[in-house]
Length: 150
Image (cartoon, rainbow, N blue to C red; front, side):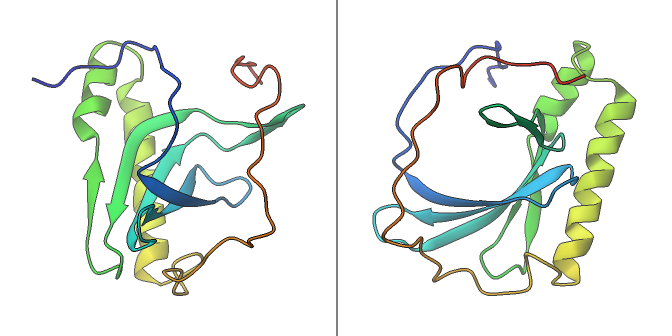
């Protein structure tokens, strides 16, 4: 039985994967690249459907739109992720059917970028690594307080 989200969260350290998030201003999705943390093997591309990012005093805010796309490392195949969760969210009134259709249209737009091998699907990211001089950022005070930008 699938447990539906309750709106809560728990803090935990991200240890399974390394990730690079690519976002272009104004788009309603970001592209995540995942490597296995243990050996830096490239695992997958992940298209995260979300509201366009909004700059805030401490960084950026966005809202996840539940539906995602998982893409094979070689870009040869893909599948929708969390269609059941989106259907549940529509059923309980968290999203409308029109919003769900818009999320699918944005996913199709991202898939068209993938099919054309447009940015960021235009290069081999599998061996990318962050500059070793970069340090992990720390979260600023208030990072977990949602600010409604509307």
